Image 1 (tube, rainbow, N blue to C red):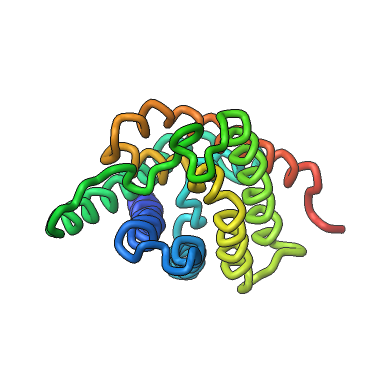
Image 2 (tube, helix red, strand yellow; image 1 turned 90 degrees about the vertical axis):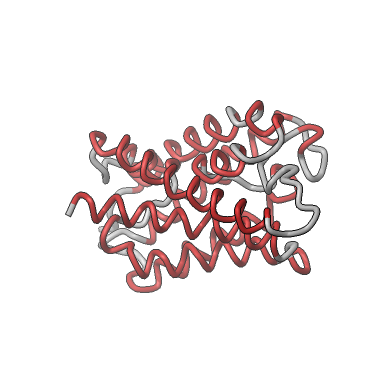
Length: 225
């Protein structure tokens, strides 16, 4: 059962990062909507597919958030995060091999997250940190509330989560290229130009802090009466 839980997290994160790279690098973010909808839909369907096995985190910030909400055992944090990282990196490898078969391919930013000169809209480090912190907090709070046994969204929870992630991308792609997920950021940064690894710290610190805030807010609200 333990191996199945980790495998579910690996596969779910693999699909999420595949959606990022497929939408941004392969499809060219068609009409500016390719990445938001690709990522949101991939998370939605993977929660339906393997969420009942692992809880469907696919994101270290979600794992930290659910721990802060006292809805996840702290001893399982490291295995979950390692599985998420493995899934994301595997997706990055697969797409790097595929894209290497295209004439003239250069990794460039490889859909990585960044700030300052590497922000799509030229936003500085403070703007990037605030965006990632707040959006991750809200995203994790949404996940936590809609998955509550009492007062949650039931079978519609994955739809709410997928749509929420789509909205987060529509809001923040111009700011940071949207992370809200350290596993996603790490996977792409490993294959991008050097600046991506140099700026990766922000896309761990802000989402993890935001995830913890979202989890604490869920704990504050508690179960509905």
